[in-house]
Image (spheres, rainbow, N blue to C red):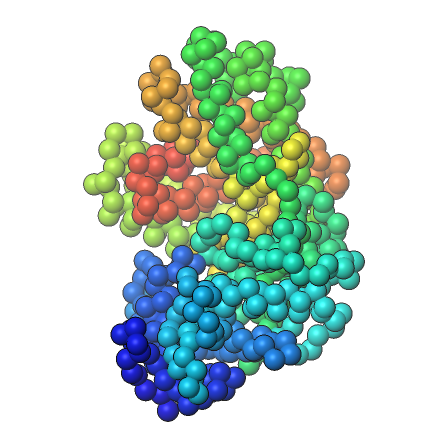
Length: 542
């Protein structure tokens, strides 16, 4: 039995005769909690990914106990159903506290249980909960067959718990820093499967000893009512860093564009280069080296090497079927075409509906995009796997400069969850490694245009002239990256295809990525649609 009363503070107070440990079995409480309370609470959370859709109702899909000795918390798997006829699943751990000093930010519901007044809170905000999870992972047995499974890598001994805190502001997940040495990422939106970030991180660092990703230390999983293994949290070593590669390259590019005026560099004096033409640094024209500097090219070389080494590790497995390399075939082609034609039609509709928001070059390029829709669709549909000799492997899937940390003179690759729009199954499909490379190239393109947009008033050249410099700069970055990447993968016998095949796959993947990006820009930053539209035009005109 649950009833609503007014507390002394005049806020709504829920009352139940159930004990906290049994509350989740109280159907009246669950019904009220889901419909009257959680719908409103979820909508306000940064990790909630359904803000662009209309919430219909929330159901309790699963629940499990997270406990140690007398401490009991509940992990809820919430199914959020939308009017648009689809649903998301979210993980929400809850706790009951009676001390009003605690967890003011994470409060969900004031409640009275067995004459004890207190709050149901998001347990992430409670240090006692975070400590329990740390202790359960750090003391995990090698084999855990219970419904809530904790795991730790055998090669590591956790020190005693000292402290825990949130890691800054995040969007889709919640990360906790322990002892200023470890990071535990709780996946808020979850899927009925092992999370790719957990699989990839554990495989790369635990099995392949890949040094340029945060070491895997442990995890928390549940076995649901259908016997599916679901990843709830991933524990890794906290990697000291100097920020991400996106910020690093923005600073470099800002100086490079400033040097156009400083060094009085004329565009007509800069040698052109064919797109995808590989170049060693020693083969670059002196005018280009003088303008861009050796430091940038050295960093691009190193990034290419680390990317190649990641793919070599991912392509070197011959026992675990989830990671064994495979060839292109008809099934993959059907999957790819279905996925991309649906996405392309969505972007066409978005462009038509938002054309009125665009102006200048963005409008012109958007009109070209619409005019060329039949040619683009034909390119997507004419994917011919029979001519491809390279391998498909598990890839990062959402590879860009923001997923790479700068560590003094090195790089560290992280966040292997995959493309946010993709289903969990799609994220695990083996793809050409050049799809990751194309993602990084699109990130280079973004960094160049972002620099122009943000600092244009500091430069004497017009925006059109800066775009010309930027496109040339982009081609040289690509050329130096491809030289090292191709050399390293070839030395390790990772088959990425012959020259024409590599260029074909890069063009295809760049087109796919730019079309994907177009949706985000049209919805969020219409001014920036010129970046993916320019990327699409480059491929069509190359």
